[in-house]
Image (tube, rainbow, N blue to C red; front, side, top):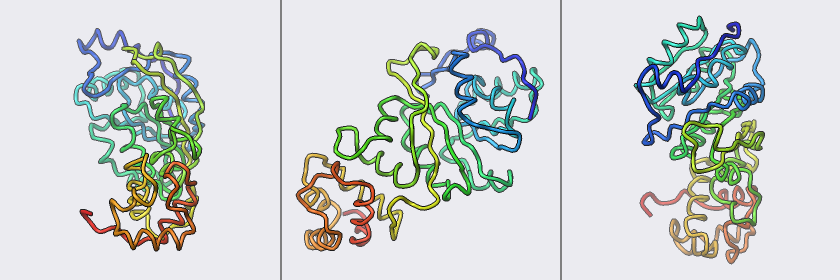
Length: 290
């Protein structure tokens, strides 16, 4: 854990190194000091915590995390930003941050947790276009909290609302079911566009995700659960029976619905997470390519 140091400003760093936010990578740099401080506090770190930060950018949150945590591993896919962040960290005397140039989707969270000797806390300002894959990556790696104990992500407000949505609403869908099956999720901070450089065209939310020790609904197969949920929501306006027939034979669907006690005339958005688990256990693995 390092002592608190003066944090370089994003605008000054962009000017110093002659770079600009890259739209292709969904870069919107966080520049609001108040929001940065709130995020660091919400991460609930201590001197024994090892953090993985996804998309550190110019280090807006990195410096605050490093001031509290035991160690920070900052993972960024932008080859241009990595050496800049390494330089400013070195200049500031921060020695407990390792900056890695890599795609977070390829990062080995299990290996990082094993090296740390304790579960990780994952923090990130996620690029909007790859939010869902990264969420699924972290949840898949969490291992019931033994690899990732919790995550704190800045995401598009609409995405956060979908993660926390209850059955029956328009925002309840595949993302809601997949997140809530394996974790608890709650919005802990709302962030306006002026907190970023450049300001995005959407509002943002910080969401806390805590992996469950066991899935909310007992299931025989995670892969089958994913496949059933995906098929069910592939055509939202169809009745559940018809939607599932895109992945299964009609007889198989009828048997599964009967065994699970779920009415096939319902639509996917009306099913609870536990009902999806029950349906998953009543169906076989889908045929690849079906």
